[in-house]
Length: 163
Length: 363
Image 1: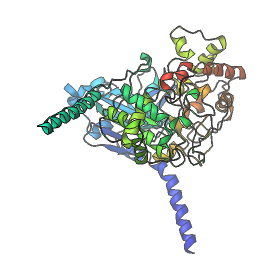
Image 2: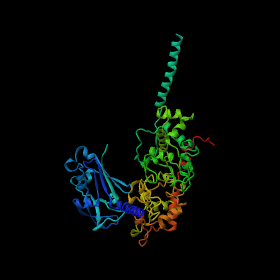
Image 3: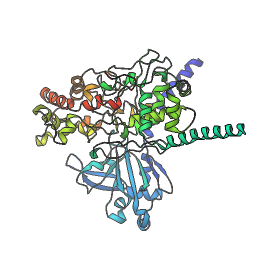
Image 4: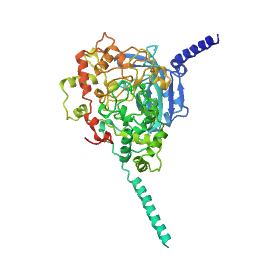
């Protein structure tokens, strides 16, 4: 009897272990910030959201929804807007994907107030959640001619000082 | 009086040693790492382990030193043979225990640019990496402390360690540091492909077609055919530090790859995208050495991969035929790609005397 319960508990634990990573897909925001963040898909629903229309690799226009990168960086307390001056202009972002792929942005180029552009951390495309291998989070940079910085499976955003 | 004279003489004699060791420490010569500008300098050498001529020479000796194994029979070079671009030709390696290792021996080339080593990227930096094979019971099976002790008993090593590290006793950390210094010098940049970029070699028609297929992604709507290999294996070094699931199994159960390090299910069956430098020399292929030939590897990517849930996006989406699910290269296209892969064999690298066994007398 004991063994059965144990076994039952064991497989239940295994079940949660197998499931938990699916729910635990997070986006971390670290580095030169006041408050490091670890955001989940549900956190994304409670943040200020927006939509952009942009052309993906397939050459077709898609409707992406999610949270503007600026909103996330502000929540973490990165130096944006009026604070983006002097030495803060030598800050940059390393955005990293699940497979280790990394790209860089200057902090100034991602700040809507500074550059006038909106970079989106998308969690949905054409009304549906991003598919596995693409989501749960993807960077969408609508005005770029090549989507090489549209990182799929975005895992982390780190703000650093150029030293 | 005589005693005083003797004492003075002794003091002078002893101080000459002090000066000598001090001079020796100052004699270290920085090692000049040479590589094409296209390789770039995106690497970090630890501040406490600068690369020196003397450190590299010591590291080379240690690389070929069987005393670093519990049986005194296995060295790093046992599973990393220079003629095989520092791999061993076996699906899985055999170390001191005789029991096969878990994964295929990786080729050692251009590790200067690799941050996280091994098939699963678990070791950060070459100094840390070296600890694993040295101490693993199925590889060299000996603690670093024991290795240091054994080396201290030799006539050869104590003075060399003193020269490189300036301390009187040998430590395990110094062993891994010297090995890392040597490994940083294993730069491969002189294959026919490299030479063709400099205009010193003309690719054959087949190699040229293979290169174009290798570099290009397919776009059937525009009539463009391609293998899209370079998407993951491209760049001047033919290496990018990414970890992908390439559909070897529908679910990776026996060896879960990077998932074992990260605990993240999305990392199931993700392994390092291996360098293709010297790929014709490093059979068998994949982390478990399951494919014996490049033909089998091409067949896998073209026809046989599993649609694992987290299959690499590029494998899932690269199609030459709009109706097909897979890559869809023809057999002659695959042959051309293999012809191109053979141009990545760097015969200078595998014959470079600076990387060879220093204990073997020249023939």
